[in-house]
Image (cartoon, rainbow, N blue to C red; front, side, top):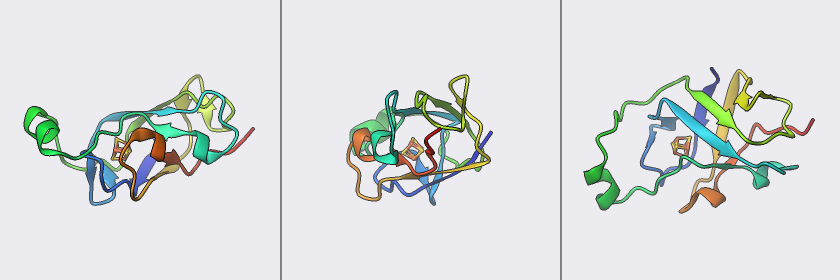
Length: 106
Ligand code: SF4
């Protein structure tokens, strides 16, 4: 499982630049560049979601990363095989404004 750093500070799951989920999904079926990828698991940090979510909120260093970016060298049978990935989108307010900074075209 990759280790993961995430700069998406508006995401509910972001804790100290780590993700508190056990897994995420990266979108980008036809991506040829990082900005055509996105973290589909992003959830905007707001009171309504926070109050309804019973998720574990401790940060995880390693997590499962499912990935639809078929053109990435690290995509192995729709799972990410990189040792480390960076999810970016410091001011993102929706998943389309996030990206996988580790994407590398085949
Ligand atoms: S944007 Fe994705 S990787 Fe970052 S904290 Fe949110 S769910 Fe986790």
